Image (tube, rainbow, N blue to C red):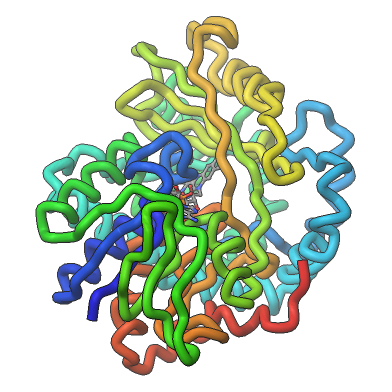
Length: 420
Ligand SMILES: Cc1cc2nc3c(=O)[nH]c(=O)nc-3n(C[C@H](O)[C@H](O)[C@H](O)COP(=O)(O)OP(=O)(O)OC[C@H]3O[C@@H](n4cnc5c(N)ncnc54)[C@H](O)[C@@H]3O)c2cc1C
């Protein structure tokens, strides 16, 4: 049965490759080429962390939000014009992890995506001929002091419950792991099983080249609808015409919301905008990725320079980027690594992208509630790069109609009655 995969980000490309490996006839259609700066998969922090089981929505989060919003240099911004469109989503988002039991349920539903992700990505990268893009150096999370680490105790408990290993670092050990780290950080945790991707855009492009070599057909083009006969999908519509198929995987990141709407499916994605700044040519960067827990941003050594990524901004769809958010990241980087020579904003690369986020912190993976043959693989929010291989695995079983009980938490039908 010919399958169409829509979207050439990390999720779509990995899924297309996997489906081809399973013997399907696969065409990948995408507005943007694999590895394009327009995809969120290009500009992320590259973290592949089993420790990311801790949901963004946690008990007590609502108490921290006003402080974040009132701090002009804080990690969160809400443009008032976006509020009428997203207030229901925001309420549900804050509620989804508001009790320990709810946060625990999210963490255990995220675990399968993360637990062996470094191994899965390392295998993929080796197969694609870019083994060096997956670096298994471990990851470090730093805190001002042990008390700040203790204040995150529930998050660390969730990690422990989900099999994540770490060891704590005092200031001397931190200095050894991350030379040049600001003196304000006196405590940390090293997650030895964590890894990072040193060029997410290049990695997606390499996986796409492998997929092409294995027989996946690529078609440039924006999909704007579907051909559906008697409730069964028969093709996808692009400006260039119809591509006939017997099944479709919608792996279009944020684009899945509009595509779902054409079928009558509610895929309640909100773009949590994030930013990065990247410093080409720095030589004194840390060799290991570091997350500054207080400033909520991560730094990652990339092949193209040191990248600082973070920030969450809610803005109306299509609003221009607020590069002040990227400037804040650059300031945070200066504070975090005071010994490093960092030039002005004009000397760094900057980027903005949309995390395709759901109101319950879980991805949307499974069959369309309305249309046979259509499957969603989206909504990965902060975790789309790391989660791509396990998502592809689930889709590979779902498209042949196999029972996949472990996909139940991600079923698109859970949003049947949700309105954005
Ligand atoms: C600042 C920041 C830091 C992050 N850090 C991490 C991290 O460290 N680790 C991690 O795992 N994740 C991280 N993320 C999240 C991660 O980047 C995303 O979850 C992931 O990239 C989503 O991948 P995707 O393939 O679903 O979407 P995308 O990468 O956005 O790709 C979607 C593709 O679909 C195409 N498309 C859309 N609509 C259509 C249409 N109608 N027709 C045809 N094609 C269409 C687009 O052209 C694009 O190619 C971060 C995100 C941000 C913003």
